[in-house]
Length: 544
Image 1 (spheres, rainbow, N blue to C red):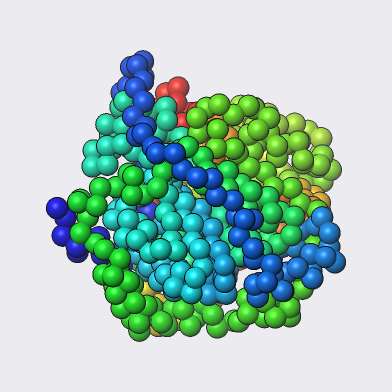
Image 2 (cartoon, helix red, strand yellow):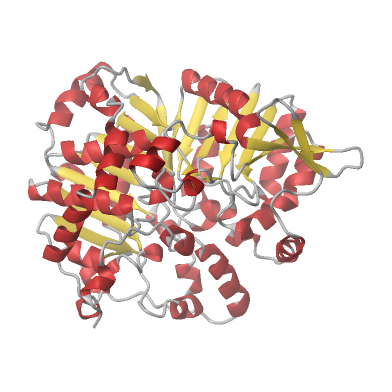
């Protein structure tokens, strides 16, 4: 039996780095077991009663009293607020937890055992103590370090935790990969946060230090969108689909309590102690300092109301049973208007495949400006993906698709304005705060439409994982995205160009205005480049 300490809330930020590298492990496993017969390892599950969010009456909640009058004035439309700043993104989540009166429905790919994860769990327990019904749905791929905590959390009468698409062999997960790779390789990548059936958050952020500028290692540059109205309702229905799916297992049916010493009273005590830590309190104070979300709740911030379309994968995609027209990428293409001037794509993991590359080149041939921002090799937290992106760079550049690669370490004067204050008050290393990785998934068409969601523009998001996003018909937002990229690309990204010999060069504008040119790819060693080149020749692009 494990000691209780093994399941304690510890303040480490490396969990994401370890767990998110499942892609590399998947690739290795795939190469080893291709051709082996599959054997389902999915555990047996007792039949669960169906639960629907709207069965809980939230019409008299404080959030409903704010939102419903706005909805009545904008029937059929969606109100939105984009959350760019990581501190505001955390403040929004914490305040929604505090404001919730009847229900919290949370769906995530990663919830780490770190400072942010502990803060959110502490607030959730406080909400449950008030009588709020909490449903927490987690993909099981990254749950190994958290399963004891989930089990303890589930002991609260108002908290239900489910693990999606679980591993059967809890300790030796590689066994599932060998015996049931087809299932294990498909993951629920959705991120949604719903309070009292009134407000929904979706986007790229998980619950981990890296997403909220508090990691000791590096920070993710990401974006969320807060939604009310028609789109929020669709996200709520999507959550219900996954919660009631037969791949969603109550944590107590998956995790053996005899293997974990942590119980709920101890968990509560540890989380309370963590919340009182001076550095933690200082960080929360910084996140709440702008009072932006409080002002929004007081209707001092005007929402933009637009037509919107939620695009989402059904749970059946995990089972490889979803029809093509049910896939998010198919839905997205159906709802996109034909661009006339410009397309901007921001994607942490960009692997366009031949079809996507051809589509981008065709747009350029129609005199449409196409820009793509993705991670540089050094900024990419899953470097193996870079091998398959790199295959397309030269061809895209030859056809005038503009490529930009995100810097791992921007110049000091371009860092987040809160960097030094966070380092001092929240006790986070400046080195970690100065390193970045792009994690946003966003696309803007002309001054017409903007897509925000969990969907990476790569084969894994397209064919394997489930995703969710929203397409906003917002000229104002599309204009803002284009202008922001105009202003900031030279500060935060290399621009890729072809020299006279058709070799790729990387250009960056320094603080003094000087343009520095690299003829060799920055941050990559010769042996890494060779290894990735060899890897790119393998027939495994669809696993990216």
